[in-house]
Length: 301
Image 1 (cartoon, rainbow, N blue to C red):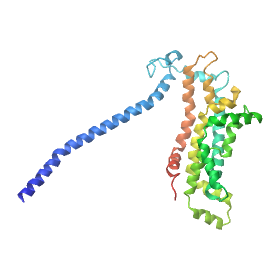
Image 2: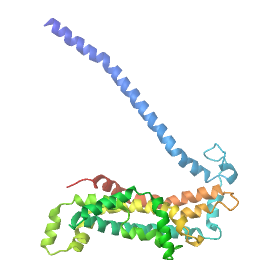
Image 3: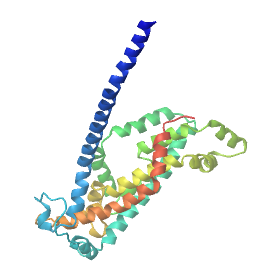
Image 4: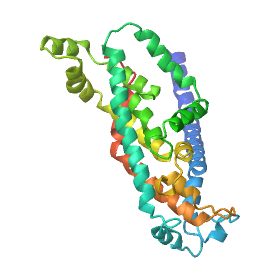
């Protein structure tokens, strides 16, 4: 009995002596982890802080300066934006970008949801082959299709219009969004379709009244990504648009560099920050639905 008590006391004493050491090691690890996270955060946020500070600097102090924020900030870069770029109002560029972005959102959500419903709910011959071919288009780089598409639209006399930038959105050519909605629709209970058919509903009524309301997270997820991609697109408008009055915001930024290669970095940075506001507002308005869509798109009920 005495040996057992001695062993118990020794064991308790051993655990007591080691507990502070374990707690100290845990605190050191936690501090190290947080310091590492702060270091990564600083690296990620450095370009954002540099751009924000650069928008308040004179043009000759932006390149080569090591200061993040100027000692004597100016607001001329933002005030000059009100005068436009090359006698073109700034609202023209934002209006063109908004037209393309909203048009792309409508086209992708409508066409991709219809295609996804056909693959998920309609049984037709060759469905598996067509689905495989659609997924295979994700392997094709955009630049491979650029030349034949340009030749096609040139023959149709659609260059310098928004049609080449919007037509594909209404033909369900974005296989990623079709796949995203398809996975979401496959998770919906089939009992809903069967009950609707017993009530005499056809495919269009089931699609509009049952499937679309339940697929709202997937639709909003697709809408957010489409809006951001269309708003930030540079190559497409650069290839198909020729008149400055039809330029988007991304092409408007290019106009800050004149023909002699002299760049107005201050105005370019200021416009870049202003151009982020619509995307940020659109994302913040629908971020909850974005998280829900990404979390549930691969689940099956």
